[in-house]
Image (cartoon, rainbow, N blue to C red):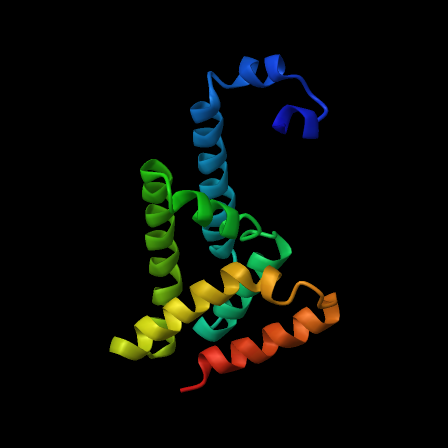
Length: 152
C-alpha cells in the first residue's frame, strides 16, 4: 500500500529498506531528528530573554511543522517497544529544553513540571486541535498561549 501511495514499487522500497522493520526504524529516526533534534538546533539561534526564546520555540515548531507526525508516531509507539523507547528519549530531550526555559523564566517545582507538560502536550498536537484555523488565527492563538505560559 505504501509503495502504491508513493507511486513506487515494492521492490524499490526494499532496495532502500531490508524489511518492514527497517522502514519503521528509518521512519522513527527521521521523526526524532526532524521533530526534536532539528528544532533544538534551530532554537540555539534564538536570542533574547527566556520568554522571548519560548515564543521563538513556538514559532519554530509551527513554521517547521515539527510535530506533524507526533500523533501517528505516538500511536504506533503504544504497541511497539523499540518505537516507545525512541519516543521516550525524544520526550526527555524536549522536556529538558522546554523545562529549562520555564526554569529560566522563574518557575519551580510542581508549577515547572505542569507548565512543561502542558506546553509539550498542546504544542505537539496543536495542528489537530485547531486544524481549521487560518494562519492569522494560529498566530493570535500562539500569542495567547505564550502569554498564558509565561504568566505567574
